[in-house]
Image (cartoon, rainbow, N blue to C red; front, side, top):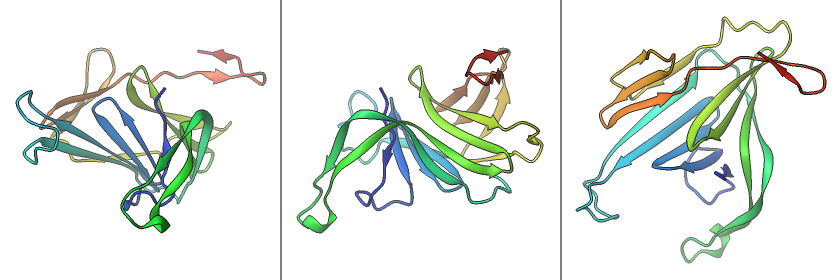
Length: 179
């Protein structure tokens, strides 16, 4: 399974968690996430600086500073022994299936996760929560549209990034879902 790895100082980046999902790397930050895509032709080498890339940033507009909380710890650990300075090494770093942004808006949380090899997110609403103030600002795309199946399609210079149509359900007291 895809793992969301907490940044405990092994990366010099503002991301709190990082996940690699196929050709995409997702950086979970305080008020949203940035995902990057790289395109390399078959003739190019892995370290070729001429590879094309794109970064798309999605942030919670008007949100308070949510708490990021890891969910569903996965088996295994990562170790980072980067460079010669042992003070910068990190070992026994846990892995998680998802990360929850708690308190994006009153009664609204957001869960970042992987599903079917793709990055996805869920809006989690408490009873009587107001969904109207929830807005996600998107930067780094040329345009976006909704396709015939209700999916959000973000057009980038490397091609489209498609997020499936949202599903909604109500969860009962014992965890059962009704659509």
